[in-house]
Image 1 (cartoon, rainbow, N blue to C red):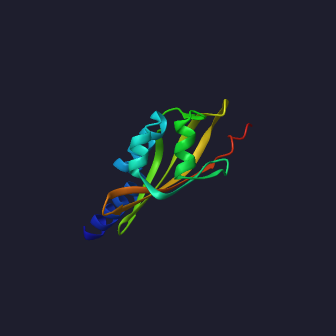
Image 2 (tube, rainbow, N blue to C red; image 1 turned 45 degrees about the vertical axis):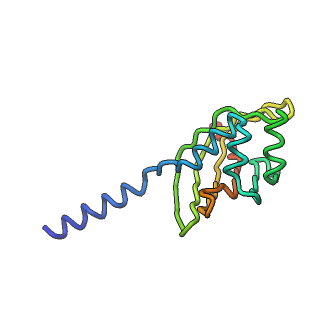
Length: 143
């Protein structure tokens, strides 16, 4: 009987590990602010030394990233994360997930599926997003 209980408990733990975590509020607010080009929200939530690495490899600091949204040279459709995993290390939260990107950059439409990592640090001023890094996934192979 004890063995059955242990096996059942083990299976429940393994099964629960396969489920996606819930997107933390700060990451959800980041996604909403980026899609809405909400500059005041981004100014507040992004750390001063924020780093944004696009799926194309383009590297931007906070000023350049916000500037492209502010001047309209870059626009994003809503960003909806799937397959979210959240790990906490003290004051640092690392969020990984997948999202479908549709954006317009300098008049060119960009679409694709990306894996992404968002790093959030809790400090005296509250949660700050310190880093975003996306990696464009290759299109599915056709058979």
